[in-house]
Image 1 (spheres, rainbow, N blue to C red):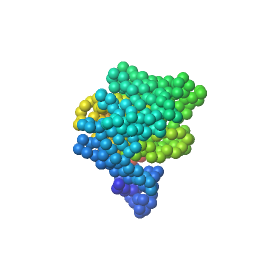
Image 2 (image 1 turned 90 degrees about the vertical axis):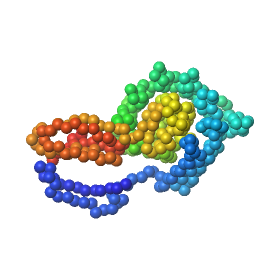
Image 3 (image 1 turned 45 degrees about the horizontal axis):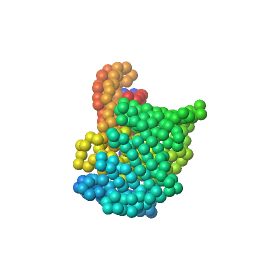
Image 4 (image 1 turned 120 degrees about the vertical axis):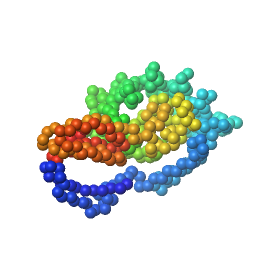
Length: 370
């Protein structure tokens, strides 16, 4: 990262008449980092894009896993201490840590970690089963609307209902006793409004360049939660009043399923891939997440990766007052764009903004957002 710090003083005409430069080293005035003191992730893949090996170093702890695949397929057979089973439609149906192989498929015991998944005729997840004290139970069931978006979830005897925007982002979820409404800006979670017992609380959500929630503050600005994820969405930090790790690229983590809900299908952060085949069928590997480039792409609906630079601003600015003789329009952030216009002109423009960017206009005497 290259950083330049400079303070310019301008006169009424907008002309620079004094320039001051900070002499401090950038590291002395700006800190960029994560909650961990150090982290390193490395991944090996075959020609099909299937992960063969992963090593994650977090502080002084190093974890690694090797992967194997079912014959003549891109379906995971084992990863670390877990084994996986798929149905003929390519849907993951079982995964667990206590098993013995019978041929190519594992036979599970309902102990340690175990999950089973059931699907409807449209390959949508409708039921999750899991181990509780050696007994197979049903932690959650799901219902869907005509547009294939999850409409309901029933867990612990309580049903949650969901409402989505035209872009597929969740706007509202609620039960009989409480609800959460979410405000989005440029595809990122901005504010959650929680209502329970007749009281309402607003929480501001702070995201990284992928739209993953990494911090939450209350209405006073006090930090109430800090967290972080690995490149593929495994929670690596979670500290505060309430867990908000359900925020990898803005998607909802379902604790009963142990998966993220990505609209068209579900995503396993441990594997770094989807649990069902790509409905678009537009790549050589129908399970891969974001072309195995999770720091460059996101997947808004589980069907196709979307490069971060697809966030755009389009608009026009008209300046006609004589006391605004010169206006500078700036998009600041990972991609910087600037444009100067003179008073009385109208200009239309399209600026591509990477996540973390903002756009504003500044005259000799005033600043204002666009």
